Image (cartoon, rainbow, N blue to C red; front, side, top):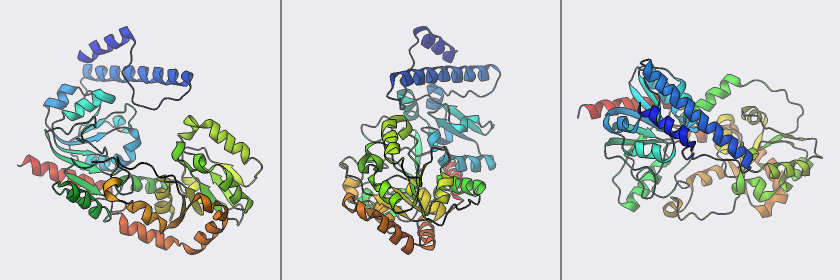
Length: 431
């Protein structure tokens, strides 16, 4: 009944709640997006009411339930973009017939499609409503990728009724680019690899924090990508003996297309490399003019192609080397295909509000230099020569050894993390 009254109120005044999501700059697209989001929320809420009428669990968890019910194991997700991180863990928990809750801020989260008596999978709304609910959550163990929970000024408070807050990483890398205080209020961290231990301990010592439990877990999203690669990989017929370069920029001002323009690409095309340009999916929305300008400038080259497909794995498979900026696609390329990378250096940001302020350097960026190299703007004319040098000197065996050294429990991280959650849940129950 509470949901029904709420829906009537919203429908009457036709004012949707604030959506914390990206809206296209064009006003027409923005209005369409808002309308679709509004009606999507209405339909999803009606679905929850219908389920309550027919006796099934409600997919829209209310604030009172999160505040009053004592949960044993909870997974908290900000949205579907983190499903590759949580999917292996959810699957392992379901396989073990463990009862747990999965709370998401995204009505399109794939987890909501799973129907299991052991999983309380709920959409908790978005924005301030969801933040308030999580801040009042009562649970023994909570797993999340969200940094800064409990940090002063951050909208999600650390609930006093959470007995153990556990962080899992959704990408490979150190904490240097996380906002200041990112894991200060966590009790345990699921480590990607051994390299993270001294970084976390350094921050704890500098801030006088009690030591967290550091658990050797791995990187679930990478396991999912490797599974997808193995299931879809096929032999691609080589069109020629020329080396293929994949160029995969970030979007916006931090992207190499924005900072470097098309000149470096034309230099590589003139050097007779095959070129695949794969823009970030967000670029198609926020900077179509830049992409169109770049296409026009490179239109005379027959050895340049553009990849706009959703799945980027085929282009990665075809490429011999990747050129990017600070995009995380570099890690996917390195670890999935054991091929080298070149990073085009970006202007330094003000890092005073990030963990870099205390760490002083990025372990990740220094490590990646060993698997390829960094190129400055004043070195762009030398880029074709640098590509040939990297292809001649960096081996797949070197890259594979780096991955094995720095990523725990390859292809088993989901089960490892699930076992940890189960054991901690049982331990806390017996206290």
